[in-house]
Amino acid sequence: MSQDVPIKQNKPFGAIERRIAMRYLRAKKSQGGVGLIAAISFTCIMLAIAAMIIIMSIMNGFRDDMIRLTVGSEGHMYVASSSPQPTPESMKEMEQRLAEVPGVDEAFQFNQSYTGVQANGQFSLAQVIGIRPENLKEYDLISDSVTQGSLETFGLGAGSDQTIAIGARLAAGLGLRAGDKLMVFSPRTRTTVTGPQPIKKVYTIGAVFEVGLLVTDQTYIYMDYNEATLLFDGGKLSGEIQLRLDNPDMIDVLKKPVGNAAQEPVFITTWKDRNATTATALRTEQIAMRFIFMIVVIIAAFPVLASMIMLVKNKSKDIAILRTIGASRAGVLRIFFMSGAMIGILGTLAGLIFGILFCLNIGAVQAAIEFVTGTELFPEDVYQLSGGIPAKIVWTEVFGVAFWGFLISAAATFFPALSASKVDPVEGLRYE
Image (cartoon, rainbow, N blue to C red; front, side, top):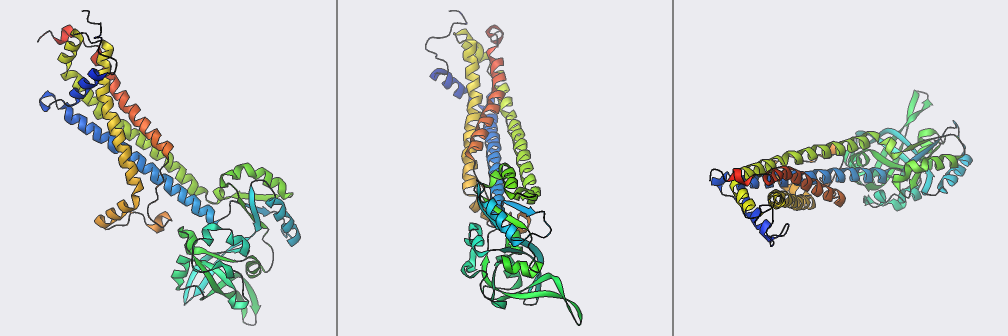
């Protein structure tokens, strides 16, 4: 029988080829330790794939939480009139025109001021946001995160009984609870017989909220829009309108329609502009980490390459015998390709399972590591988020990681398998 005529019952990737491939992977230690290297290769690929999934899921979770909390506590788009003295009528008309733009959920006037607050002998800095009660209640992130009091009384009351809403960390830092009094300072002053005196007013805390974003919980105070206008600007309108969109990702598309609807020169900024540093850093980290872990997977494939080279070298006699009894070059290539591919496939599957389970139980894993090491893995003051390490599994990325892991391991396997198929049976048996 010719050496290049395949055995009839040996189908491509059939039972015989698979059995031989599995047998070669279980080579004994006396045969070069191929089995041990194969186990090491499997472990390397598994850990590389799992690490890739875990890191990308944590990055996705961190980015989503930052955007959700930031967008939830702020507007999506901001329109500021260029007029130095906008009138209530002109601002009301612009507000109505912007609210009618397709894709805009609501538009309302607001103002934002940085100032100092004082209570119980403690002083702190805060951002006071003037907003109408009905608009604040539309902020699901705020209204659903009230831990003390209620937004139902927001903006009601006269004098020091007028209610405001305050972040939980700011309240805790000043030793305040719902119903307590808080003094808010204005940058304006009034002239008295003793000289200029800062304008300040006492308010009642009607609601305490905790959204999980450090800057919001630690600095934000919501106050009735008209009251904030009087306190900080002496009744002069800020000329700013905040827009909430149906889809926050449509900000770039809606810039032109919003500008046209304003019917006057305006300055338009978005939530991305106000958080440009954070958004850019998160995106850069995502790209960098994906690139790094792609390289890690490539490095993890080198043990597969080494094990296959050793396997081909140690099995040159077996290859010669297979060729002599009728195995084709393609058959030999498939056998050794399957040997290496099994390592890649099994390592990738194990890495997927381990990585997904790790992400699904990230809270328990974090608690266990913190308990053993005695250190906090996710400091709230550093990462600006509370609630532990976030993780979001994006299944398209998981499948991409699986494909990349298999592709690299298959590439590392193919060339040694091709070399095996070219072994001359005469040379392989010359000295046997």
